[in-house]
Length: 167
Image 1 (spheres, rainbow, N blue to C red):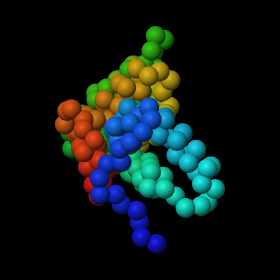
Image 2: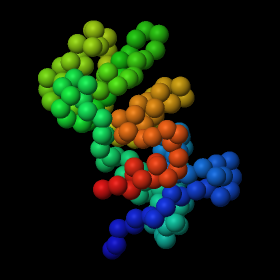
Image 3: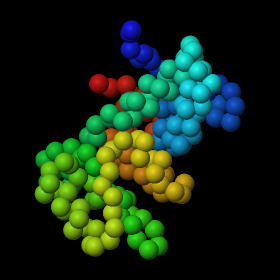
Image 4: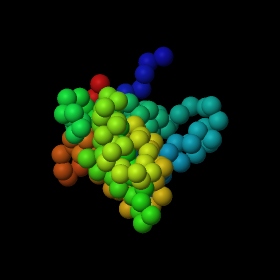
């Protein structure tokens, strides 16, 4: 069976998200896309998938395999693979300084930066956008993703599509 590979972004034509592309929504509303995909799966019951269903399935899978382009701020030698969310009593901290590659010495630097605070070291997979509670936290993390994937501003549907479509 031939693997599905779209030629262009998928843009909603109707409804609340009319004019918005799935690719931009990966950054702006991942939670909705994840829910919608599972809803489409329930409704199709193993039947034929629509173009939207196939495109969304492809996109969600690609969101787990994208490789960041930003170099590790700890060693400056390898691309980042992980970021940390540092938890404080009054909120969280996310930022490029709290990113690292897979080298143990770089991960140890994150531990030092956390200064004894609780933190999670997570991979740059889009599904992680579901883990944060508030819309503000999710948007902050989405901005970090845009930065490490070196997406030019403003983020357009085409630029987002190119990120997910590259090999």
